[in-house]
Length: 300
Length: 125
Image (cartoon, rainbow over all chains, first blue to last red):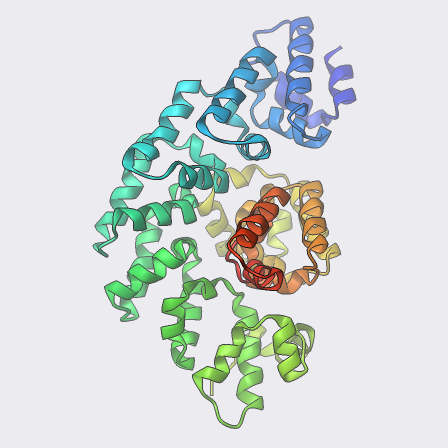
C-alpha cells in the first residue's frame, strides 16, 4: 500500500525508504501513514510545486508527511502574517522545508529578532528570502554573527550591519574564523578601515568569497591600478577570475599604452567588449585559456 | 561528491561544504543533472566551476527550476548565459518572480530597460 502510493506520487525507492525509516513517521501504522502522507503531499503540491519538488520537500523533512493539512495551513498563514507573499512562501518552503516542522512561535521569534533590532521589515523579508535556511539557525547564532561584525572595529553603523546581513545572510552558515581571515586579508593588503567598511557594505558577499580567489583578484586589481574602483564598486569582485585574466591579457597585448582606464574595460559586458575589440569570450579563451590554466600570465 | 570532483579540487569542495554543511546530502545524480542543464545552456565548464564556488546553493536547485529561470531571462533578452554567469553567478539562486520584481522596482524608479538588464548582468539584482 505504502509503496504503491509513493510510486504513484513520484518518490524513488531510495526516498520511500528514507520516509518509512524516518523517526517521526515510524509511530504510524502503514494505513495511517498512507492517509497522512497523501493529504500532506496534496497540500504541499497545492502551493504550486511540481511532483519532484513536492517529493523533495517531504524527503528533506519527513515530519511533514505526517502533519495534517490544517496544521500545515496554519504554518503557511504564519509566514503570510509575517509579510511573505505567495511565491515567496513557496520559495522558502522549497529551500528550507524544515520550516514547516518548526513551531509558529519559533519562526515568529526568529523573524522578530531582527525587526526588534531596528531592521526594516522589508529588509528582513529580503534576507530570509535570500537564505531561507536562516530560519534553521538559532537566535544565539544571530547574536554571535552581529557581535563578530562589530568586533571587526570597522565602525559599522547599525544600518551597515543590516545591509551586510541582508546582502550576505549566508554568513550565518559560515565558519566565522574564515570570515575573520577574509577581513584580515583586506587589512593585510593595506586597505584602510574606512575602505574595507565601504567594500563590505557595498558587496557583503566579499565575506563569503573563497580566500585564495579573493586574494588573487585583489592582487591583480592592485597591479592594474584598479583598486580605487574596486573599493568604490566592490561588486566587481564577483566577476570570474578567469574572465578577468583573459581580458587583462588581451588588453595588455593589444594596447600600446596601458592605463587603468583601459584595464577598466575588463568589466565591460561581452557585447561592449566585443564591439570595442572584436573578440568574444570564446576567442579570448582560445588565445589565453592556457595562461589562465597554468596561471602563467603576467600583468605587464 | 564524485560529480563535484570532476569539476573541483578537494580543497574547493571543502570550501563549499564550509558554506553549507547540508550540501553534503545532495546526491550525485542531482548534481549531474544541474551540471548537464547548465552545459545545455552553453555555459562552459570553467564558468560552471566558478558559479558553484561563488554560489554553492546552486547545487540544491532542480533542472526544472533552472529551466524556468533561463526561460525568464531569455524572455527579457538575456541569452548569453555564459557571460552572465561569469559576471553574476548569484543569479542562479533566483526565482523568476524575483527577476520580475526587480524589473518592476527599477522601472518604477525610472530606469530604461537596457540599463536594468545591465544591472542584472552586473549583479545588482
